Length: 180
Image (cartoon, rainbow, N blue to C red; front, side, top):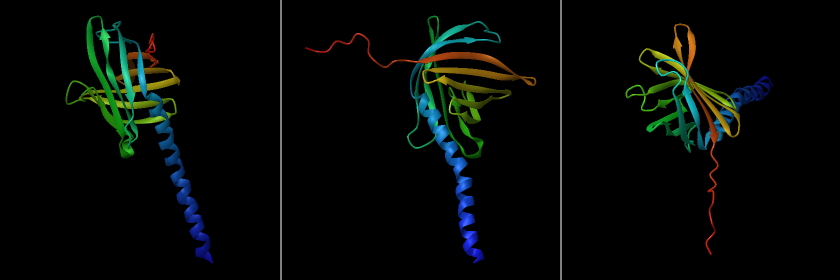
């Protein structure tokens, strides 16, 4: 009789512990799918040697078909100069998300060493390159707006360095004429 009661209780405990993980995965999937599509908008370097430098970016967001994660690929323009930019992250066990900004710390970029989707509208990713430590945050205040902030640690304080305000780009071709 006692084992008949323990089996249903064990089953309930297993289902209850799996529920938060399933909710978390669904929340993450919802966030990453909301990144899909084309984005464009202005940005500015708000601290450091190049403070005040304004630029314009265009990105295409996508998600991998079999894993949780995202890729933003495109570039930013300052005057006549274009710089290719990309960020890619995928779920990586207990560390949350791992990936690369640009070509990672082995190249001229940054490694994404951990991160989590905070809620359906925000992801925070830890970035690293040698002694440089910081965070990259993407926030979606609504379906068609994405704010990206990169902050670095200076002593014990996180200092915003780069900010971008992107808008979803309408994929509809303007001025298309139907053939006769």
